[in-house]
Length: 263
Ligand code: SF4
Image (cartoon, rainbow, N blue to C red):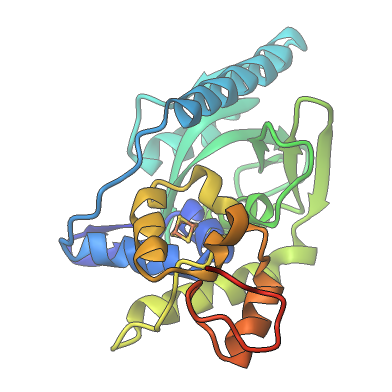
């Protein structure tokens, strides 16, 4: 998320991150307000990003090998460049900047398809290249955001969104996820507008593995003796909720009668 002329612009990643962790949204909000939060530097995440870029390149090369024309827009920031390339009828747009209705982002790949639109006898659908074998809900929401951005540009909502993994090219109907996308986006916007901000806590979630705020959240949990620290995190979220409802919030405050015993 960023401010442009005092207007908040969300990215598709913000929406996916919000779904993964509401606390992350509040940390983004604090940083935007000028709070200094130390970010994790992790070579494994850099390596993952590099593998992701290689995967995207491989997919684009495979499209070029099929004889499709490729327009790479990574050196452009202005969404007008994307509209120009769409109007010119490019087969494939790569790293296309998109913006509108409080959203801004860069689509990995836009694929030209034969569905008529205001552009002509064709329109575009977004595709995202992902390394994960199982498609995550956040990936679908990101693609729904790109579809929503394309809608006013071409006058038609893309019927499909595409996820390209190393093993397969998956196709999903946008209409099946659009309402959920709008729900999560609205909840994100509400959380950002709430005054005071909603009380959130850095409960460990799978996204922590790649989250830049991990150091910050880990310090907070340790300072709080958070239950997730027991035996390397074996106390899972559901059990933590149960234990909290029974009383303890810290490792050092076990509930009498439970198996949990920390000396
Ligand atoms: S490290 Fe985990 S708990 Fe903290 S903001 Fe990131 S995802 Fe949320």
